[in-house]
Length: 68
Image (cartoon, rainbow, N blue to C red):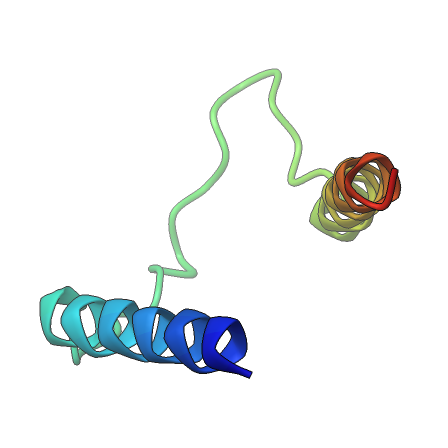
């Protein structure tokens, strides 16, 4: 139980410290800017999905090796 409490308090402290460093305002991108010649808009959802899959696999491998 002490390990879990210590880990939770460490994560809470890290979250509190990083929350103060993040920017509170968000700026939208300009939609009227045309893409440079030869570059399309692409499909960013595919990249986000692939990144999520790779992150899941990395976490799965780390968690699987930690159980041994």
